[in-house]
Image 1 (cartoon, helix red, strand yellow):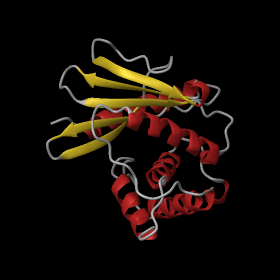
Image 2 (cartoon, rainbow, N blue to C red):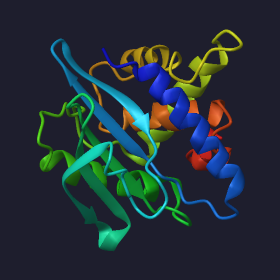
Image 3 (cartoon, helix red, strand yellow):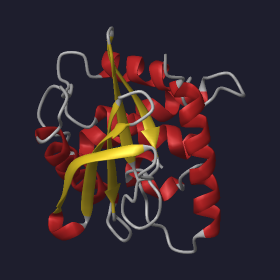
Image 4 (cartoon, rainbow, N blue to C red):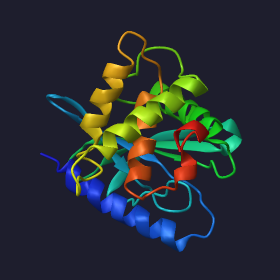
Length: 201
């Protein structure tokens, strides 16, 4: 069994160091989808600088592509050690307003999902409007504020998703998971508060 929690901790630690070292912010996001018999699990991963240069001793690249004139890129790969599939994405969203960054993420994820070599779960509903995304980030932030001190970013995922599920029950939109992730990263001090929609800061 793959220890996704340990992988995410290592990657988040590396990401924190990267943010401190860089003067300009260029957010890099990657989603690793690990297929197991019971279903699909996901973990956050960070690819190295240079637009998704994966270590060839650890990964076999299956393909990839880009969106929005190169602002978004993705790579599908297989981990050599265990055969698990992952999709890494990078989004060059520096200077974009939060909602525009969200739309870039959706474009990149949609393109990556369309060419994924493994089944990918899609969020239901239409794309979240700016108002819905703001509301989702507020709900996520309020949920995070009630968690016990010392709660890890990964342990905060489920309570946030449950709160968003209740808030948007009957009217889901694509982007709730994104909103929850943004709020978690801001709450943990990994990303700046300016990453959130203006009404959620």
